[in-house]
Length: 143
Image (cartoon, rainbow, N blue to C red; front, side, top):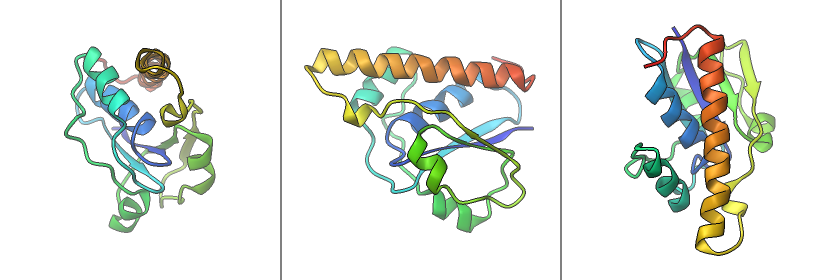
């Protein structure tokens, strides 16, 4: 059984997408959560990009990784989806599977509304592919 925590700096974009894709595709008792080093607010471009895939994250709340750490969450994997989080994430007891996937930060994207959306879609699709690959590599059945 996989219990995955996806971590990024603000839990506003990359980790939210990874959590949503994992929970969309994994079956059974496998599940994911996400959290941030310094929780912020959901990125509206990411909410729109995920809606294009039929996944509604508009009601999601951002969470702090240190709050989850204090709760003593039992996890099988902690995956940082940005370089900053991999350097600042606490070590969760019993978790020997710490991974780092680096994706560009959607909050840093510049341009017109459509140009920003296009960049967010690229990151979204890369995260989706990486999550599917992770699920397949761990022999998790995909819905």
